[in-house]
Image (cartoon, rainbow, N blue to C red):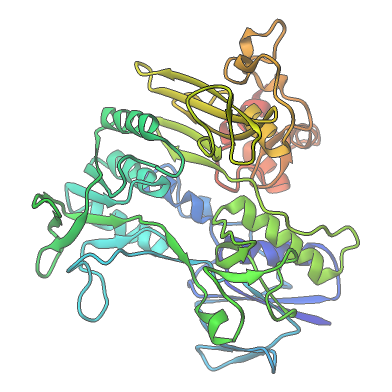
Length: 477
């Protein structure tokens, strides 16, 4: 029997183990996880911080008893020549196939006095990556009134909103000229900042944090322009870096991440890598939908599935999960485009820009088209058409001749409107797990009438959670 060892019990490693076991006999799976608890949905930590979820509610489904799960254990070394993994308790696991799902580590910028001489962060400074981090942030949030969030990207904004919902005075500190610069341009970023301000969250952008203040405990930050911003808590949300240490020490090829081919194989064909630690075709995705697609491909490879297909990259679709702020972004809505509707991209393809802005309502929408297909889109303040736009983007289907219907489908005679009934049965409702409207309706017809039952059967809503309201509406109707 083939023995597969999975290093990492996060969302990617857990999915590899579950998918491999589900495919049948002939494979024995052992999972090694550094955190001393079962696997959980890391994407939903912001919901936990905001008080909209409990620790139990973010747990991933339990793995079958046939899978050996070793929590609270760290893999110290991999020996590809002997096919062994050495754990921190001295145990040595032999494998036939190895899967690296080591994830990523939070990036802490080189700010003076942010960390002590021994490398530990100053008390009151916490990265936002694990459940333990979230617990610590919630504990500190209960002892102070002022919170600072270092980083104005997706995670930083979600963390800021969660802290604000706990009653703290919150400021975001961001080095770029505007918030979420990877998804938004200047006008969109400023509109997002205005929407956050209405929720009591201030944003300082275009600033450089040079030092932390306080001796034994964090009391604020000093900016390059000489200003000091006081705070009782600093949440570091400056992105992540792939954890490649174990792969490098094993002699595997690495770049930003562990280099893999289209079957997620590393430079050693008996070793695979998935999720945040894997680099495919020069890209480290960091998105849950990509990690789970990679897990499916590895499970196919490990079990010899006849219908296996190689990985071709995953569409970059992100949703902001912050109460009071609706945002969906996909692709790059700005690449190669100009102000006019008849611009040309770098490749010479015709480029069209569809845009709508309503400053009073805080709505900013922009869709970039190439060759009648969506190359990128951002929908801020009104995401009612996000399902349809995402489906067109994901499948690269031609868009309507009347471009206005992308943002205002109700303009069409007998058009699709905004109701779930308008979606075709093959429309993907849960992008993370590839669950279609038809699959949800079949599940409901089979007796799964509530959200929990549907989630258990189809895995819909168990990824980023962005589809929850649509799934609930489909069930209600």
